[in-house]
Structure formats: C-alpha cells, structure tokens
Length: 416
Image 1 (cartoon, helix red, strand yellow):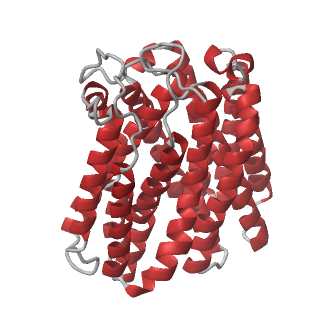
Image 2: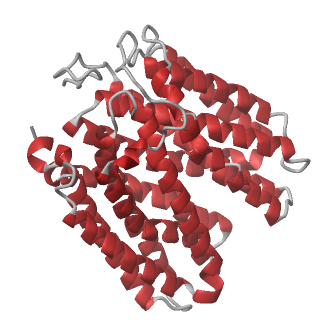
C-alpha cells in the first residue's frame, strides 16, 4: 500500500503501522474528550454542584473549536527528523499527561476554578493534537486509503464512548474522582510510550507552506469548500438536534441516569461503530457526496418519522430504537464528509484548512444543539426532531446534487 507524498510525487514508501496509530490515537483522544465532557459533569453533580457550575464544563470546551487560531503553527513548524506531525502529537501528549496530573490536585466538591482552567487548557491541547492527526492523514493518505483511515477513525470515535462509559466510569466512578483520574493518567502515559515507539512521519520532509497567521480561512475562497460547508450544515441539523435532546428524552421517559447513559453513551457508541464500518463501501464506490446524500436521507427520514409519531406516551423501546438507529447513520456521515474535506485542503496547509473548516462547522453545531435544547420544553421533542429531519433532507438532496463538485472523490478516481 503506497501513500501519496506531501510534495506531490506519485507515491512514497508506506508508513508502517499508520492505520494502527490513527486508530489508537483517535481512541485515546476521544476517550479523554468523553471523560471531560461527560464524566466531569457527573462528578460535579455528585458533589452537589449547581447546574450553572456544571454548564462551565461545556464553556471550557470552546478552545477545542478555537484551535484554528494557532493551526498555522502546525503547518509551519515541526521536526523533519522526529516527524513534522509526530512532533506535535507527541508534544501535546506530554502536556496532556502533565495536565491530567494537575487534575489530581483538584476536587469537584470544592473550588472548581482550578478544575475549569485545567479543562480549558486540556481542550486547547487535545484540539491541537486532533488537528495534527487530521493533517497527518490528509498529507499521507489518498483515495481509498483516506476512506479507510476515516472509517477507522469513526469506529474509534464510537469505541471510545464504550471504553469510557462502560469501562472507566462504570467500574471506577464509584471509587471517586482521584482514583478515576489516576487511572486515566496512567492510560495517557501508556499512549506517550506508544508514541515514542512509533515513527509515523519521522524523516519525511513536509510540503513547503506559505500559510500565515490571520490567513486561516483561505479554504473558503474555494467555491467547493463553501458548498461543502452548506451541505454539512444542513445534514448536521438532525445530528445536533438529536444529540442535544436524546438524554432529555430518556430522562423524561422515566430512565434513570445510569440507564440513560447506557443508551445514550454506550449503546449509541456501539451502534456508531457499526455505522462507521457500514459506510465505508458506500463512500469508496459512490464517492463522498453521493454517499453522504444517501446516508443523510436515511437519517432525515428516521427523524421525520420519529418526530411525526412522537407523543408523551411513546413506548420506551421506540425511543431507544430511534437513538440507536440514528447513531448508526450519524457515524456513517463522518468518512463521507471528511473524505471530501481532506481533498480540498491545500498542500502545506492541511492543519490550517482542516481546523478552519471544523471550527466554523463546530460553532454552527453548538448553536443548533443549544437552540434545540432550549426549545425542548416549549416546542416539544417531536416538532424539533421533525423539522430538523426536514432540513437535513434538503441537505441530502444538496449533497447528491453536488456530487460532481469534488472530482477527487468521484467513484472512478476513488477506485483507481
């Protein structure tokens, strides 16, 4: 298996263990994100903290989206000998280890200022690491290899939810904050050791770059990028609305917190693993846009049917079935849309273009999520989910109509 070189030559020697590294890094990073966003909130609530304090957890995640501000530094600076992107991944992992060690000095039942500061710093550092991972993939993977790498990434996104929800939090959560953080700290140290033993792009000269700070959004000069953002936004309406409402629906239906977490985190993640794997042949054979259109249409119809028949007396198993089925489809969108985005990133500015696009997409996603959640009590779950599905159906139609906008992901070239 050959990888396209960053300098534009036809191919370069295969990077040993690249797919394994992508999977391992994604699994570890996403598991940490799950702990920061879900586990921290659980510990704070258990400690008796009010909801306004717990809401700061999500505010502390903003640096994750803001990573496009410093993404040009990833494209411009790096060690060719140690590995341009590997140097960033390893450096951020060292900082993650230090910050998790610092979490041992905090207490959810006490003053949470230090805890929130640590969460904000972790969000910034972990976002930087994800940007470097995406840039590594966009640089060294092409065509079917890119789709395979994104499929592995989607699978590991979902697997991380199972690992953190059913593994760490379920078995260690009752032992307290410090025991749980200590276990995660040990895990981050193991990841650092594994990085030291993995070469990744060590010894490979990165593509020259002209990217500069304050020039992060050059990708949107491309008409194709603007169209992709429009399609992704429409499709993500259903994703964001369902994600924001599923926990509320489960609690209102009479599920306990433990039962709801098993469905919304563990069950949905397990379903997502299947969705990521099932989407791969569609993306490879049909291309990113056409696959996204078909997958998005299924998601939209599911939401519209569920929204149409929603009532306060709906059976519990139908709520669970909707959440799991929707998770299968949602995770299938990841390799479809990301494969198109990676093809639009310029040489020498993979990290900048990926993070700029994801940052704008993230702001829109959070806006939809928060709006849907805020309107739940007044408008109702059924109306919100039905309308979200209707909008995403337009996104699916737009994706199919735009399938020729990105020739790098057309069927004949993907299969070449």
